[in-house]
Length: 309
Image (cartoon, rainbow, N blue to C red; front, top):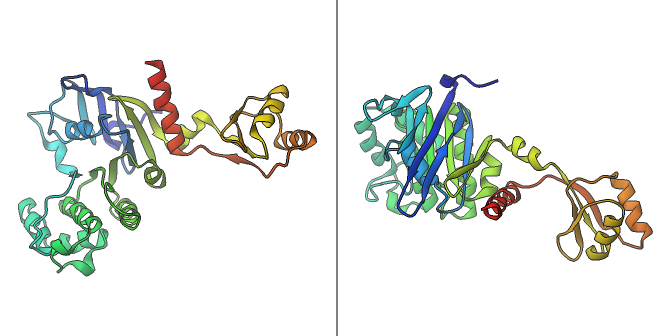
């Protein structure tokens, strides 16, 4: 059953913008449900930033439409952008001012109530640093302050372009907590572009995978995993001979390394395969069902695309 347009944070239909040399985006049909954390994944140059600039009205599409919460974005009607906040690349901050003063400058520009400053500082966990000058902030703190600026007008949708780029592990973990808190406490929809697949896997409810400007997949993480299903991983003393014996038994094994065998869709039960290998003299150290990671699924899709081309 399709979701009503007004319950979609973002919808695009045939969105296209191509630059000289062929780079850009081609016929994008995005569907981001309200309340979702949507991870927009792709390698550098795949079209992520171009897509974001089209969604924000910073670029004009050659073809296609952008709809935000059921309202179409056009050159003549920019009202659809009123419920949106964004942090694209590095935030523009005044390093000689405190965090609170930076927020005050933007608060006046957007004509937001003064109380929004403390609200935004709380959400990004910077309230204890409100009076510190920004020049003393770490990169992660600056990124979180940039998000606080985007929250001052209480957007329904927040677009973040590579918000963890350049952060250390502690900064990435803090950013992850902030994004989760925003959706839980403010009910925001978040559109998050990233090439850090492991981070998106811990955050996203939905994902879109873009490669060379084209959308390869869109849906929930579970939808993506169901495409490939679980696999059986066997760790033994010799993967080459184990693969040969499993092949004779009607399986389709793959040797991952000298000791690891992977079966995408085993024909026989796990205990039968274990008994077979032990009977042939193998020491089976581990036999376990695994779910493919987002990273492995991503590379499988993009590799298949490149081979098809």
